[in-house]
Length: 59
Image 1: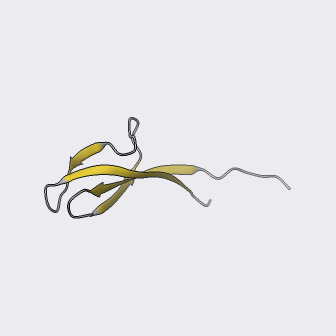
Image 2: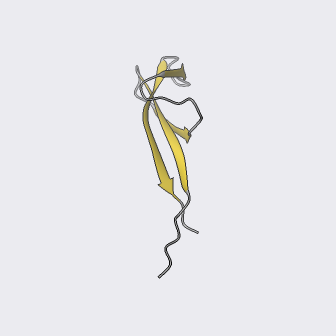
Image 3: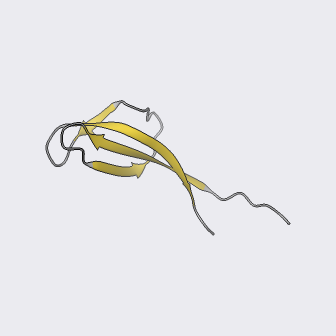
């Protein structure tokens, strides 16, 4: 009868341009798709933001 909206948490997926390692983290203000973010922990290549999405959490 009553519809309650579920809270949504935003996430960012970073992917290394050399070894293709993916890492998921919480979204930060200023995250934009296809921007270089940091060095890869595995191979020291550059990581880029590949995906930004939200997941709803159940209460």
